[in-house]
Structures are given as C-alpha cells and as structure tokens.
Image 1 (tube, rainbow, N blue to C red):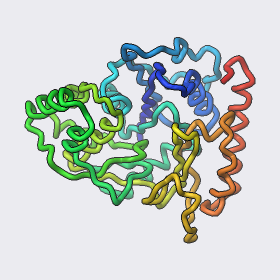
Image 2: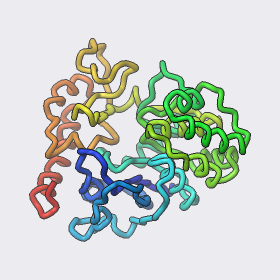
Image 3: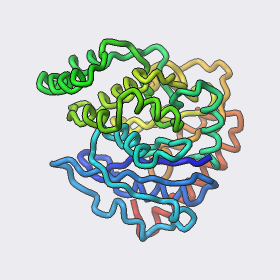
Length: 326
C-alpha cells in the first residue's frame, strides 16, 4: 500500500502561541520513529495579509531528517480552507496514493508504523468513509445555520452565491470530525471529487474568508456528508489527547462530554491503546506531565505509553538544548 502523510502547515503567526519550530519538531521525531510511509507531503500555503512570518519555518538544515529526507515533498498552495483545504488539495496533487493521512503542524506521531495501524483500523469500517480521532455523537451541524448565525451578512451572501452556482443542498444535518486528524482512502477521495466535480469547485467555495476558522471544519464535515462518506472515529480504540490553547491544558478526548472536565468523569473501567498522535504541547518544554497519572487508569499498557513518552520527550529535550531552541 502506498501511503501519503500530508502535513498541513502555516508559517504565519498572529497570536501568543510560538509555533516557529513546530514543523521542525514534527520532522525531528518522525525521523526517529519506525515508519514505512511512502511520502511525506508538506503543504506550504501563502501567508494571509497582516500576519507575521516565521521566515525559517521550512528550512530544515539544522535538524536531522536523514531517514526521511528522500520522502519529503513540499508543495506551495493558496491558503484556502486552512488545513482542511490543504489536505484535500494535497491529495489532488498526489492522487496515486492508496491512502492519505491528515495531520496538522501542531500534532506529533506517537506510535511506530502509525500508517499501518490507521489503514488496519480504516478497513474495519465502510469502504466510503473518513476515519478521524474523535467526533461528538450527540452533535449534528447545519452548514447554512453555522454560517448565517456566526458570519457577517456580506460573507454569508458570498458563500450563498458560490454554493447556489453549483446547486448544492445546504439544509441538512451532519456529523463533523471534531478531532479531524485522520485517514482517507483513494476511493473515498474519488467519491468526493465525483460529487463536487473537481477540486477547483471545492476550493472556490472554501476561498470565502470566514471570520471563524471553525466554520471551515464544519464545511469539511459537509463535504464528507454530501459525498455520502461515513465519519468513523477511534474513540473506543485509542487514547486521544487534545490541546486547548486558551487555558494551556491537555484533555483526554474520548467521551461525548465537556472534554475540559475529563478528570471529573466517573471511571467505568474503560481501557485504550496508546495514542496515534499527540499535541506538541504534551511534551517538553510544555510540561503537561501532571496529566499522566490521570491517564494511567485508561491505558491497556501504561508502561508502553510511558516508554514512548520518555523516548519522544528525550528527543525534544535534546532538540531544545541545541541551536534549535524553543
């Protein structure tokens, strides 16, 4: 099986989060783990006006990527639809791969041979599907309501004009991959393109500049729904960790509840395998280790989790002590 790991990125910055070395960290760790992924696609979007730029974001001269350098391909693109638009565009540029794996540039790969694991889990479900880490079973979204209730009238009108041009039906309820890192097969992508006609039609609508970035995620769910792709998740299989920027915390994201209150939830003897991905902020130097004791009871193999945690954390400590300082 030919697999394409698509890393969606953004080298601009407009908040207090310091992302200048995030992509270097991802590749440094990817160079250390075991993987047979065929290609590592890095999407390099243009920076929006008014945003500052980390000028060396795509300069990898200072890190060791000797094990993966021959597999890395960088594709420049427009910043359309943020990471969701980048993911679909990345597949369109490399349509020959059997599976495409979606990851954003603030998440790390935690397990060896992650691609084989994801393919195995993907193929346990419907042929036409998208496998993500997590979605809320109790939540359904309506694209038209999401935009009308949250965006300015001018933005809403622009969106309506574009969708009406293609004749898309907007008044439907659907599932959105709330934790949307995941995997899509070649056949499922072809189904999406068969529904929308071409990637240019999707990008035409995604080019609307929504004020709220989460609307693009809702639109991604709409793309899957309109294409009759089932959204599946790893909530019952793997431990999922999610980083919350506003309060600088990491939550366990496996249950249909307020995930900020995960430590307060009664334990019902649930057991999970180690994560496939983790947020960068779970490791050095962000120090979220106080969450580990709370996670232990949920893990089938807590020592395996600790071994991986210390291995990856040590790599990042060395990274931080080098000239690639945080």
